[in-house]
Every structure is written in C-alpha cells, then in structure tokens.
Length: 387
Image (cartoon, rainbow, N blue to C red; front, side, top):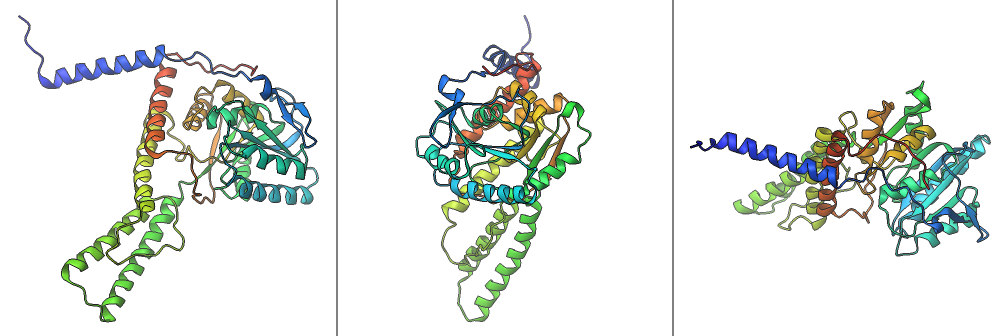
C-alpha cells in the first residue's frame, strides 16, 4: 500500500499540476496570429471638406517626419487641451524649421460621445494633411486603437501620445534625444519610452518637506493655545503619518496639497490613490518578473518608435487592451530592438478610463498569458500585413 505524500511534497505536486493546467489553457485558448482586419469603413478617413479618402499604409514609404497617434475613447472633454498643446508646439516647430513635417492621427476607438466631432474641428482648422480622424467601427481597446493609427501613419518616426495630455508634449524633444542616442539603429529599428519612474524619488522628497510642514503646523497650533486631549493628539499624528506615507508611495507629485490636522477622514480621492498605488506596484512586479526587466515604467503612454520598429512590433502584437505596452516591449526585447527610457514631465489627469481593480486584474492575466503563450510557442514573433 502506497504511503501518502508528506504535506510539502503534496503541495509541490499540486502546484506543478496547477501550473501545467494554466499553461495548457493559455496555449489552447491562444489565437496564433493577431487580428489585423480593418472593417470597410475603417479603410477611409473623412477630410476637412467632408470627402472620404483611403488611409495610407505603414508599408508605404514615409512622407512625413513625424506621426502622432492619439488613441481616444470617450475623450470629448480631455482631448481639446491635449490637441491645443500638441498642435501649438508642432506649428511653432514647423515655423522654426520648414523642413519639419508632421501629422496627428486621432483614433476614435468606438466612442459613445462626441470625440470624433471634437477631433474633426481640428481637422477643419489645420487641414486634413496635418490632422486626421480615424473612427473605428467598434471598441478594440487602447492597443488596438494605437495599432490602427500606426498602420495608417506616414511618418519616419511615430509617437504614441495619450488623449489626456498627462505628459507635456514638448517633452517629445527628450524622447527624440533618447532615440538619437541609440544610433546606429540595427535595421533602422529603435524605441524611446517616456518614463515616470523618476517621480517616485521626487514624491519622497516632497513627503519629507510635507512632514516638516505638518510638524510645524502642529507645533504652531499647540503654541497658539489650542487645547487637545491626549486621544486627539494621537489622531492628529496618525493623520500626519498617513499623509506622509501616501506621498512616499504615490508617484504623482501633489502640488498645493494641504495637511488636515483635524478629525476628518482622508478624502475618497486619497484612498483611491493609495489603493491604485498598491495595485500599480503589484503590476510592476509582475511586469518585471514575467516579461520586461529592463524598463522601469512600461505603461507611460508617451513612446517614440522608428517606422521600422513600429511595423515589426505592432504587426506581431496580440494584446489589444491595457497591457499592450508590455507585450510591445517584450517583443522589442526579443527582437533585440534597442530601447531608451527617458524621464518626462507627467501630471495625473482626472477622467481615466482605467477601472482600478478589474482593469489591473485583466492586466495581470494578460501578463501571465504573454509569458506562457510565447514560452509554449502558441504565439510567434511573426510579421504580417494588415488587411
């Protein structure tokens, strides 16, 4: 009669069986190649005069220096600020250097609001040679929207930029410098990623300042003769320490923040920020552990690619939702495309479409599947044309 396995060995066997089951599920549910099909309506864009014109192809020779791809989903409120800043910069740059040519491609990812209408105003103002609006029939996800914009671009270099304008657009010069420093580019392929990783150090420094300010304010209140009970003193100092902890953890620099030394609870905004920060650190660990080890901030939506790098990576891309950046860089690393990471100015803009818990859960699943599907051969580093 066989003896039962000791508990540690049984747990190890169970874990191995579970991993094998997950690998099988990841392999069997994988599509061999990404869906690159365009609907008939997506093969055209509407010019400033209201006429339909066929979209260009990334397989054609480039005719512009720069293409800016702006994925947009229900962005009627945030898009104008980003477009004003971007086009103001691009127009000034073109006046300084007439040889500099550009286009901005707004990709409406199946929005339910007036995103296309808002974007078309810029098309009419600047002309459809500079601003183009590509409306997708249904929502593909941010990665899918960016890919459709990239495949319709005419630039030698292609910049991904979020519609919220969280990154200062003039920081394109920083990512351009990062791209330049990677030369010579193997097979004309290189990627320069904007990064918010440096903000963590800045937020820690800010937290030290806030701690001193909070202590001074506390002492001033005591000197002024405010009488607090011992229990109230404890609550006050807990509020101070919790606020400092938030500043240390949060990557965003909170300008103009005030420390509340009363009995009020922290606002829901701070609670959400703290929760999202915890999820973010867990996500970053999974990115490092499973997929990309060299880049500290994979999710900043400000990335500059050479045309050849964009063609090769986006033609292979499978993930179309939030984790597409990770697969993009995973593909680039396996193709030995040089990647630069450059610090950019970034501000959190309200109105994010990222639902904290469920979006991070979906992204965690996608990270696991990226690793397992490439590891098991379900996904291959192949390139094919968009239909």
